[in-house]
Length: 165
Ligand code: 6OG
Image 1 (cartoon, rainbow, N blue to C red):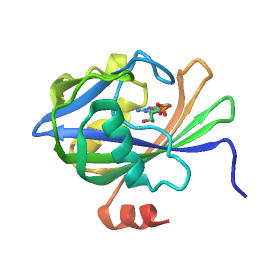
Image 2: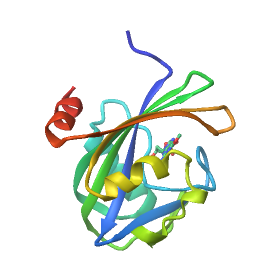
Image 3: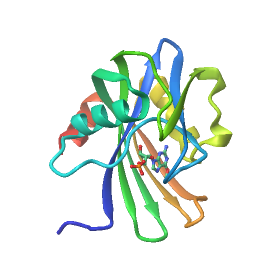
């Protein structure tokens, strides 16, 4: 049975050498946090198409190729579950521009502003930047405090099997 509380979201990490493009979220869920780019899928949209659309809407960049690198589940006290599909995007065209939703800024890997990001990020993002695949679950209170976590670094083959499902 389809769980109406479960929503599928994309999260794109745009990477250029040892720098990552983060966006300051200007409105909506996660406002005031630096994050990757992405959002909920439209009906009948594939993950890849949703990722491409959100990246363009939020930064004006065109994604030429993206690789799935993490599968994250966020459980909220309200009962809402976000299923996050994380993409590493190194092949893109254009120059990032500020949009209504996001203000994009390049950060070097050593200067990522974890103190102004969702609390889960520090537990999985460093692994992904280190080219590992991550499968993780995080639970959050209604005021967005991290309550619990389970993080697994998964070898390529097993990750591929998980992603195929
Ligand atoms: P819209 O509501 O803008 O999509 N997102 C999270 N990202 C991280 N790193 N941690 C979380 O911890 C998150 N919860 C949501 C997924 C929301 C965007 O925010 C991401 C989407 O890219 C709870 O459609």
